[in-house]
Structures are given as C-alpha cells and as structure tokens.
Image (cartoon, rainbow, N blue to C red; front, side, top):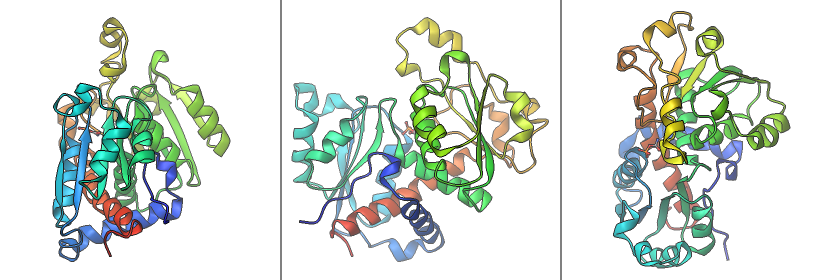
Length: 311
Ligand code: CP
C-alpha cells in the first residue's frame, strides 16, 4: 500500500519539494483559471481546536478556489472532543468524510497523532508552541517573491522567540539554504529555546547573534520578521503584561533600515507594528496573508495528487 504523505513539520518536506511548492504557487497566482476545477468533488476538513482567522479561512478559500468543498469546526467546544473523544478517534472518523484534513490543536504533537490514525493526508495547522509549517510555506513564498531567492541574506527575528512557533518553523526551513545569517532580537526571558539553537542553528553551522537591540540591528537586515508576544502560552499574566510591548516597530525605528528591507509578521499583530508602517512599501505582512492562500492551494494539490485522490 502506498504510504500517505502528511505535513506535520516543515522538515517533512525536502528543499526540492519546498521549491516545487513555491513554483506551483507562483503558477497558481499567474494562471488561477487552470486550477479552478482541480479538486471538484473533493472535501477538506478543517479541525480547529484553537482560534484562527488566517490559517483556517485561507485553507477554506484555497479549497474553494480549487473547486472543492469544506467541512469542519472552528472550536473544540462544538466538536465531540468536548465529550472526551480522542484526537486519534476524531482523525479516524473524519477520514470517513473528507479527502484531506487540516488540524490546529493546542497540544503539541496532536496533528502527528491524527496523521498516525487518519487514512487521508493530515496537515498541521499549528500545534501549541511547536510547529506551524504552512505559515512557514507562506513566509518562504513571500521571501522568494520579494527577494527572488531564499539564500544569502540576513534575517532578523524580533519579539517572542521562545513561544513563537512560526519562528521555530521558519528558522528550521531557512537553515537548509546557504549564506543565511540570523539576528535574534528578544527580551532575555523570550530568547530562542536552546534546542532550536543546538539542533538547528549549530548543526547547520548558521551564524547568529542574540541581542535585545532592535534599532542597532536594523541596518544589517534584509528581512525583519516581527512576532507577537504569545499571551496564550504564558503561565503568569504579570509576566505577559511586563513583556508584551517590548518591541513596537514605528517609522522612526526604520530610519537606518535598508531601502529594500522586507518587514514580515505572521499576524495577528497586537502592538508590535505601528499601523503607520502599513503604507510603507517595505511592509509585506498583508502580502504574506494572501500568499498563504496560494501556497495552501499548492500544498492541498500536492498531497491529494500523492494520495492518488486527484490527477
Ligand atoms: N498566522 C496565523 O496562524 O494566524 P491565525 O492564528 O489567525 O490562523
């Protein structure tokens, strides 16, 4: 029997597969009509046990634009998880109704358990503080469309580097390209976890510096990836309130930035980027949102083709 391909961690995809998805998304953007019937008669199930605007709606928009349909739920309370049904059973049940599953869950590893029990492809749409591989694909597509490459640049990550799953996934993905350098800008309490530094950065020999200084780092950056302090991951509200406004990007802070800097943010933002920046041509975060839909279209197609469900 053919082994099903799932997407749980961005590292489940080879560099060639990521480059292929970017190429496919570029083609979807250029010729959307070619794809409008590709998933006719197929169903995507969006199983969201945690809140989402972009990820869930972009998955759903992606499936509709491929000609398919969508079923699912947007909170655990409206599913039988509230009666104690396990993730494994949920995956087995939903496999009877849908051709592919996108799951977000607060528990790290839950989408992996779903993949081990489903008979259709499972996509991790975010698990706790762990991984968010489709956000990473949206980020990679955005960087590629802005810079024309994924190698040879200095990337600054700023904010909550401890709990920010988008940061962990993007660092893992970029570490496989050459000529990258990272500047990790965060308060002491929200530094990148040691396991990411040891298992990813040191292993790949990626040069990086850790600092608390955003403005001092600015002139070196090709990409600035801002992040929200993840309130939902804090055990203590006082710590969150003390740290939440550590970095607020304002036009003044961009005085020494490169003219072709790309400012990214996975969103939602709270205070991290002043709304005045939205009209700066270097702001890319709403382009990331749109790119998220196109790369999810490319991913749904790839996984369904590999499962033999679509041609
Ligand atoms: N970037 C992102 O995951 O946004 P949502 O939480 O709204 O899906």
